[in-house]
Structures are given as structure tokens and as C-alpha cells.
Image (cartoon, rainbow, N blue to C red; front, top):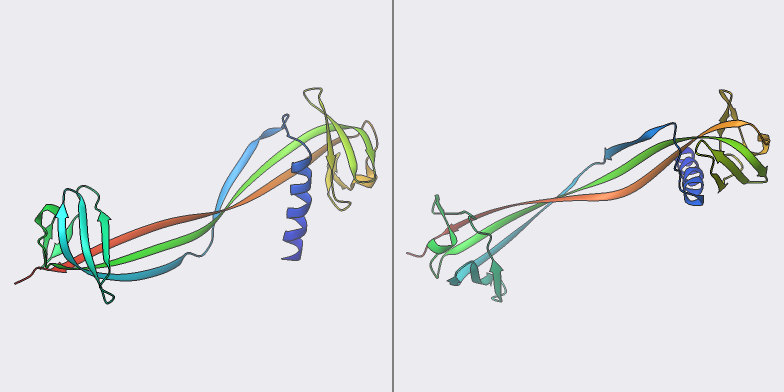
Length: 188
């Protein structure tokens, strides 16, 4: 974990210092999915009124009223038979099982930069990119450049050296999906 945090800090610092416009190869983006968390919630209510796509239900056990905007084409399984909102009658008891799956996703973009050292001092580097533009970067002392196929730190850099650097940006995201199954029992 320590090494990963070090790499992320190093590369984010490099990435924040300037926009990389000249690249030896196009950026590569990967999506790394984590372990999903699944949660299920049960809701029960009795139909009070239906009008158009609107459903008013008296929720159990508290007895509060809730208004639902039902998606067109939504099916309810009432007494084992598929029904639509227009088929629901007051007194029908509906039970919804809402399953939510939350998956952490890390979007990782890897870019490779080629340039020539124009200036280097301390942790400050100016590179002349292949486009002829100079870009400045502040990098951690331990950041590794490649010079003629060999690793080099910022302290090893001298004007005129051709360098390659790899920038990795990791952006955390969350994917959320829900599945709702509604069953019910019609009044007798």
C-alpha cells in the first residue's frame, strides 16, 4: 500500500504541473472494478389511488402516504399475474424488494511523455516536448524518469538529456445499479 500511495502522489504531482500535449503513444485507460456491495430494502404499502402513472400508497408499518411516479411499462406481479399500473385497484397490497449494487471503480489513465531536459534544479524540471513547447513540472525527489533506457531521478537530470516519463492518473468512481421487484396481493 505504501508503494502504491507513493506512486500515486508522485504521478499526480507530475500530472498537475502541466498538461501533456506531446505523447509518444496515446493514453491508455483501464477500468479496475472493486468488490461490489449489495443492499436490499423491503417496502410494503397498500394502494390508495392510481391516476395515470401516479401511485399513492399507504406505507406499512407507519401508515404514512407515499406518492410514486411509476415508469411506463412497469410490471407488478399481483397474485402471480403480471399487471400494469392501470390494473391496480385500491386495497392491493404491494411489496417491493429494492436491491442496490454499489461497485467502486478506479479509472486509470496511463500516458507516456517524451521530452528533452531544458532545465532541472531540485524537484523542478522544464522539458522541451516533441512539439517544441517547454513545460514545467514539479516532481517528488524519488520520481523515476527513463534516460536512455535507464532509471534516473530528477537529481540525475541535465540539460539536453532525452527523457521519458509515465504519468498515471487514478480517478475513483462509483457505479450504482438497482433492481426492483414488486409483488402484490389484490383485495378480495
